[in-house]
Every structure is written in C-alpha cells, then in structure tokens.
Amino acid sequence: MLFIVLAAGFGKRMKSNRPKVLHKLVGKPILGWVLCACQKAFDPGQPNRLAVVIHPDMQEAVDYIEGWKKEAGLENVEICFQRERLGSGHAVLMAKEAIDRCEKGESVAILSGDVPFVRPETVRELALCAKELSGAVLTVDNPNPHGYGRIFRDPQGHVERIVEEKDLSPEQRSIREVNAGVYVFEARALSWALDRLDNHNAQGEYYLPQTVEILVRNRGKVAALTINDPVEVSGVNDRCQLVTLDRLMRLRINHRWLAEGVTVIDPENTTIESDVQIGMDTIIQPYCFIAGKTVIGKDCVIGPFSQITDCSIGDGCEIDRSHMRGAKVSKRVRIGPFARIREGTELSEGVSIGDFVELKKTSMGVGSKAHHLSYLGDATIGENVNIGAGTITCNYDGYHKYPTQIGNNAFIGSNTALVAPVSIGEGAIVGAGSVIVENVEKDALALARGQQIQKPGRAAVIRERNKKRP
Ligand code: UD1
Ligand code: MG
Image 1 (cartoon, rainbow, N blue to C red):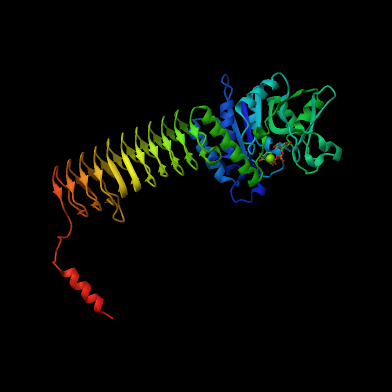
Image 2 (cartoon, rainbow, N blue to C red):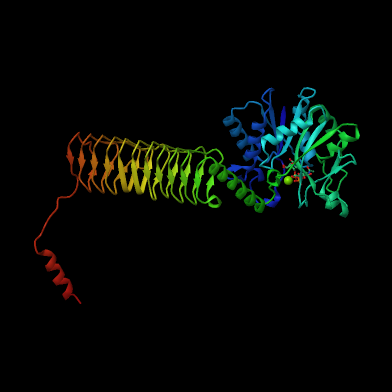
C-alpha cells in the first residue's frame, strides 16, 4: 500500500516564517501526527511505502521527515517536491512515479498534512471500503460546513462528485456532508484520473476531489465512509484552530490516562505528550509538562509546575515543581521543590534532592542527599553521601570540564567548593566553607579555609566608636 501525505501548502493564515505543518500540537509537529497515523495504518500483509509532498523551500520539513524516518526505522519514505502550488490534485501528481510503481489493484491512501488527528483505524476502514472499487472518500456531517468541499450523491445515494466552497451555488451551500480530505484509491484508477484533471474552477487549481467525478463518470465506483467525530477531520489553517485542536488532543490524552489509573488532577491544565508512559496510581498535579520519551513509574507524585522531558523515573518517586531533562531516576527518589536535573544525571534508590539544587551529568548512589542550593556537575557520588548546603563542583575552567569523585559515606560541609578534577575518599569529612583543590584521603578530615581570629571586647569598642561618628 502507498500512503501519500500532501504538505506543500503555504499555510499563509498561520502568519509564520516556518511551514504550517511543523507547528506543534501537544509537542509533536502537525505533520508528525499524520506520518505516525500512516505508519500505524500500514497494511501488515504487504510492503508499505510513504511519499510526502512538500515545497522545495521547506528545508526544515525535509530535516524533520528524514529524522522521523530514521527514528521510525522505515526505509520506504520518499519526499516529492511540488515547485508550483497548483492545487491538491497537482500535488498528488508530484508523487505520480510512486503511484505508477504500484501493482494493479494496490491501494493508495492520500492524507492531508494539515489534518492531524485522523485515526489509523479510520484509514484502514476506508481502505476496506475502497476494495474492488475505484476508491473511497472520508466524509463527515458537519453542521458548520463552510470552507469545505461538499459531497454530492445521486438519487441512489452513491457519491457523484465533490464541489469546493467557491464553486457552490448559494442553495448548494446548505449541504452539510463534507469532504474530510482523506482518500483511498486503486492505483491504476487514480493514475488514470490524475491525467484527466483540469483547472476550470473558481480558484484555477487542479483539485484532487475532481478525481472522484472523473472516475464516477467513467463507470468507476467511489464509496464514502462517513464518520461522526469532527475533531478527527479538523484541519489546521490558523493559530486559532491550532490551539483549539491542541486543547482537545491534550484532553483526550489526559482522559486516556485517567482511564488507565493515573490521576491527572487538572486535565485542562496539564500537558502529557503522546509518547509518554505513566504507571498506575501515579498522581500528576496541575500545570505539569511531561514530554518526549519520558517514562514514569507507579505510585509517583508529580507536583505542580514540573517540566519533565525524556526522563525515566522509577516507582514511588516524589517530584515537586522541578525541571528535569534526560535524567534516569531509580525508585523512591525525592526531588524538589525548585530543582533542576539535567542531561546524563543518574540517581539511585532513595536519593533526595532539595530546593535550588542543579545536577548535570552526575550520578548519586543509594541514599545520598543534596538538600539545598548546590551545583553538582560531572560528579560521581557514592552511596549515603551528604552534600551540605551551597556545595559547588567547580567543573569548568573556561576551556574544559573536569570530573569530581566522592566516595561512599563522605560528608561535604556547607559552602564547599570542590575544584575539579578532585576526589574525596570514602568516609572523608570536608569542613564547611572549604575550597578543596587537592584529593582528600579515605576517612580524612579536610579543612581549607582561613584560620579564625578572636579579639575579646573588640566588638563593643567598634560600636562605641561608630555611635560617636557624626
Ligand atoms: C481540501 C479539499 C476540500 C476538503 C478539505 C478538508 C481540495 C481542493 N479541497 O480543502 O474538499 O473539504 O481539504 O480539509 O483539495 N496542498 C499541496 N499543494 C497545493 C495545494 C494543497 O500540497 O498546491 C496540500 C495542502 O498542504 C493540504 C492539502 O493539500 O495539506 C489540502 O489543501 P488545502 O489548501 O488545505 O485545501 P482545503 O481548502 O483545506
Ligand atoms: Mg486545509
């Protein structure tokens, strides 16, 4: 089966410098939703191919498609360029070579790159409707049909043709059955009809929907599959439609998690991207953004305003108002409030990270703690280590990054600067306020700060002197 995605359109109404299809809905580009729907609709019994039609100016779209293809592990994805935007029918013509490589009887599904939420099951059902016929078109009964192509049926109810808004007479405008912009055709029939398209219409464009009329006039049969859900076939043409669909999809995802046993306290104000996984009995509090390939275990509490991207989080963790990206966290870890956990961080079971602590590429062993105001970067920290408030690993000299090692059971006093590369032995104690530039041995006490001086009665003398000053 061949899938063609039409995405060369300009998207003028978005008022944007980037292609419309790369604007995001719940974290994924509009085009990404359509490509994923195609992949999920692949016919398991056959080889499947995908062709995406874009404009040559859309380099960002080329990069996105190449990246998607690699991640999806697909070989048969090609990009076809439409140099002049002469209409949706003309766009399909740009994939003509791919269509002509199809076997006789093979199905060609055509989807619009700006209709993101078509379900793969619907595409498959449409392909079944098209079997043994020239094609099938997806339609929806839309109480507000303005702007869509309308479906005309003969007295027996068979689809005859599709007429675009601008070509309708005033009385025809009341027709509510509209073209959803998703089609399946038999490859040879499509190829034959494409060669016969004309642009004799109000917009002077080669309309893809005209293929339906051409096929039916030549004794072909085109079925219609009518669905009830207008969201599934809503297009994105401006930013208002973008945020409306974003909200609807966010709610759908959040309600799915509610059904799976995850408490999403405020579904309206929580974003969980589509590839995220969450275990049972986890609670997600309001205003969280959980993104990318994040996996969250069971029985966790994700406190409000947390942003978590591409992390894996074990069972029973508590995360409060924190930013996390690219981190791996074991079971029963506590983070936050106001912590920043960055790429390459690995936290073992029972680790506890408090407020205003930043971790980058740092691992911490079982039961270790850093409770207040620290930066720990490029550090390997053992088990049961206490990092005092205000401890900083000085890992950068302006040119290179250097590692810090801290052994099991070590105790780092508050306000310590660990000038890397440096290592602190197991069980060592570093006195508060130290600037540590040399390695500290196992079980040693290291003090690296000015000696304290005490002058008895001197404070009272200073006070008296200051009082007398004018
Ligand atoms: C289209 C249909 C309309 C249907 C509606 C559903 C046509 C002529 N009309 O209208 O019947 O009700 O979708 O959403 O197809 N494209 C190109 N190159 C072009 C023109 C369009 O690649 O030269 C692509 C667009 O990027 C888009 C798709 O084709 O993905 C549809 O084009 P668009 O201009 O959005 O058509 P609509 O007015 O939405
Ligand atoms: Mg459109």
